[in-house]
Length: 272
Image 1 (tube, one colour):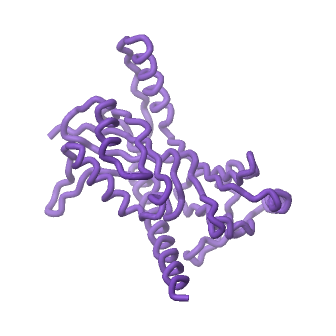
Image 2: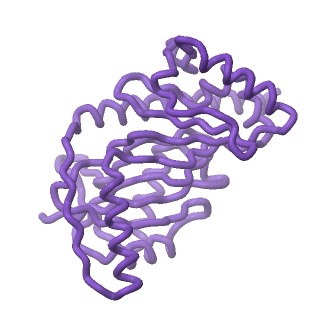
Image 3: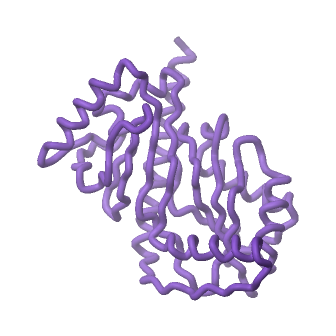
């Protein structure tokens, strides 16, 4: 059976940020089925829809530019897919872009992500001083929450600073253990910000094959403006699916562990 892979760029906002990654997968499955799409299924006794996320989002964090891929049984125009999904979507889940993927194109691999959180004005000075102190060291050991493990975060930090009153964390994604933004917030003495009602947000997700997305977007805009058919050349990339799978599995396990710890904490607070 022929399969047609599409990539979605979407937002996960508001109260929806409190559902787990597994629940988000179920939400997408229901939305696709309510919209009347026939999903391609895996083989075997327990067949599952072919949906994939290159990097799970932890519980309680908003996503402004998240990515997922799904395989459909029939080719459908991206505009129609976006319209039908938006009509069936739930509050807090916004479909921003639908990109058809050419046959044989590599699976998405994340190059870097950007997290942001608003910082009260009276804490700007102390935060800037602490960032300067930490980043001027030869190493910055940070304990990973719930992992009983300490890692040096400096090789993974592309940039870190206060921008427009927000703490901005740009993180390179490595195949080895990656830090969670909350690990960094705790070490910077900013882990109480979320408790005060401020929202941690994953503002950007950059893929290693982002040039393909940019090319597709430019072609789409050209077609809208000039009503011309343009074809973009397919880019070739090295395929390291085993490495990607291990990274996704690791991130998912970390996300589920943090989700469980957060639920336990909320349950203890409610009892008190």
